[in-house]
Length: 303
Image (cartoon, rainbow, N blue to C red):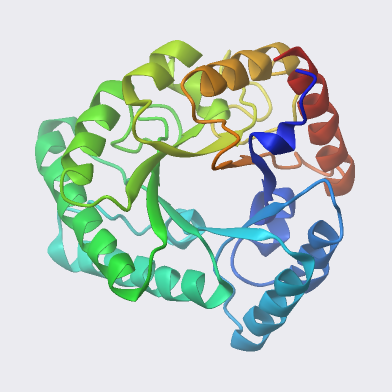
């Protein structure tokens, strides 16, 4: 397209994926946030837990000055701790819920406009019980978030049988879930991720069109699924063009075209679209992020 992509979306990156040393809420948070905030390519950033209150305060000061839109990804709160929001053990579910509510508090403290989480693991024999536990937890999260302000809550659609093995999951279940939650909570939506589509074995159209009315946020990235023996197999979010991977410019063009066709990418209320790309091995995070920008620039020119 000849029109600027910034007319249709807020371009962001997931801080804790671009700089994975910060994923556990510690590490070089300030200097890496400042690096992203100082880059005018980005007008959005996605953060996760920051364990030190003084660091959170300093991060907020940086982002206030840099005029960035902030979103909060709570996924590391569960992926690095083993917590499960649809745990069939009630004590485990409550523990996971408490962690996410703490994340909502942090998100409001940072000035975030959105809060994302993921569903947990499940067993096929008790899948419906796990689904109902997820519904119960999500409604509690939506009520809690609404009680504190107008921040949106989004469930990110993950793979269900390869890596994260989250219950949601395939598009048919994502649609059922979104319909059920949205019927009671208008602050809820879905987060779709280009990098998860190969893991879900769904095309862009298959993954997006059935849930188009519920999508509130999008991630763009890559995956390796051809062979479990290959480097970065699974939900590792390698850079675009990684050996034996699935997504590059062509796939991103298709993703963006469909998102524009359904009205998700729009000039009236541009949504956040963020890179979810992680350096592999000893790759340089700054070079990987530069590569992401080049891929998006090229893809947008062809949308």
